[in-house]
Image 1 (cartoon, rainbow, N blue to C red):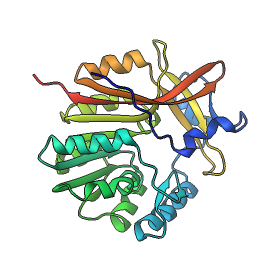
Image 2: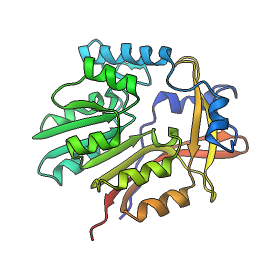
Image 3: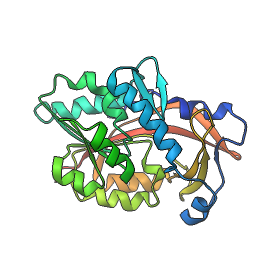
Length: 268
C-alpha cells in the first residue's frame, strides 16, 4: 500500500523560487558535456571550505544543524528519511548499515544521530568526492560514521541494508548507469529523497544556479523521466511509499515538484 507524506524541504530548494530568474533551474541541454561547460561545477574550493566550517561546528556542538553549508538553530528532520532508517533497522535485528551517496561530511548522520542511539549496530557510510572523503576521514570519521570513494568500496566494507540518495542522484552524469551499479549489491532498502521528475518520456538536463546566500555555483542537474525511473526501479525493487512536499518550481513554461520514494528489494 502506498501512502503520501509531506517531506521536509531544505532552504536551498524551498527558497529558489523566491529569487529572480537568474537562480534556480533553466535550460534543456543535449549532453552532460554541454551543460557542464556552461556551469561552474560543485567542486569549487570555496564551497567545500564553507561546508567544512559549518559541519565542524555541528560536530563540536557549536551549532545544531547544517545543510548546504548553512547553519540552523534547530534540526530539520525529514520524516521519510527517519522512518526509513528505523524500518531498515527493525527488519534487521536493530542493525543499520547505510550507504549515503553524496552525503557531504555526514549531514544526514548528524541530523539523525539522536534516533540512532538505541540501535545495536550502526555503520553510516558516506560516498563522496575525493576531497570530501579525505576531509571526512581526518576530521569527522568515528566508530559509526565512515567515508568512501566508491559504492563498491562502501558496499564491500559495511554490507549496507539501506541506501539513500538525498538530493544527489540527479547530479551525477549517468543516473541510470549508477542504478545499475547499485543493483549489483542487492541492498534491501532504497530511499530516494528530493528529486524532480520529468513527466515526459525523456530525461531533461538543466543547469541549476545557486543563490549567493548559499555559495556561488552552478552545475548540471537531471530531471529524469518518471516513467523510465519507475520502470528501472520496479525491475529490481517494489515501491513501498512515495511522498512529496507540495513545492513546485518553474523551468520555462514547465513546472516540477520535488518528491521521494522508498523501495524494498523484491524477493525471488
